[in-house]
Image (cartoon, rainbow, N blue to C red; front, side):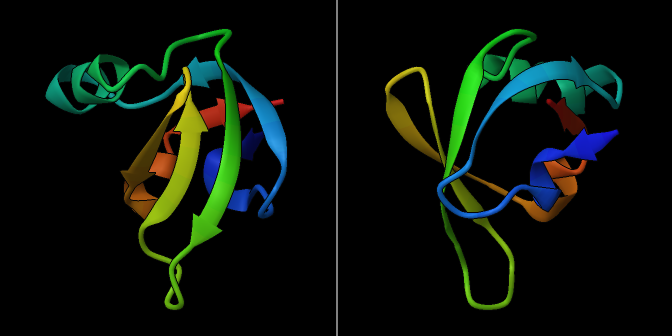
Amino acid sequence: MKTLRQAKIGESAKVVKLHGEGAVKRRIMDMGITKGVEVTIRKVAPLGDPIEITVRGYELSIRKADAEMIEIE
């Protein structure tokens, strides 16, 4: 199981599954990260948090903790 947090800069991946539950999972889905969507890692902050990704044509910054809940392939 590979998560979005483990992906390298410039890598594209497809979301396989969202872990977590309740409000956290709903917030991730509201940002446009759903099963089957393609995401690209754009930048990672110097200390590793947050991570900037491109999803559905826009840039989005997410925390490491949230990226850990997104399973990719």
